[in-house]
Amino acid sequence: MIVYHGSLKKFDYFTKTTTIPRLPNDIDTIGFWFVSEMKVAKPFAFGTETVIEKSKTEFWDDGEPKVVQYDKPVHGFIYRVFIDEPNLKEYESYESFMRDRDPFCDYFATKRGNLTWKDQATLLNKEEANDKFRKQLLKQRYEGFTVRNTQLQGDSADLFCIFSQENLFIADVISVDDV
Image (cartoon, rainbow, N blue to C red; front, side):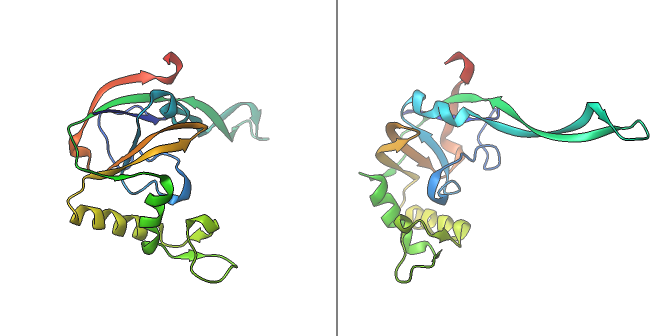
């Protein structure tokens, strides 16, 4: 299976620290995320990085340059990744996936009652919830999951989450400027 991953950083292999995308509803730390369409991965390869450097135009009274901080636009990369026949749990919709994850989540909001992801409440236990959800699927012998026809960045694609980097093989790294 070929999937795509957009990232601001260039890397040779997948690790948890180099590949955390910006995803809604605090789902980013469940596993490694991919999409079925290259065009849907592209927005994840654009962003900014904070730069701290000595100013070339601003100086202190003693002549030393001031230190300035600014956000610099970054154009990253799209990874074409081969995954060798993973055993994936299949969700027909984003809603069904989130319903499965919700029992592990503790939400906080001014509203009372049984809160869910739809209430746009604050998730208090992101890491714990994602870890417990992943472990539940691993007990069922799944290596990850797929969410069919997910809306991301204004486009629709299948969304894939893979739990281990062992089965991920980078087939190609493409500069987002070349797409």
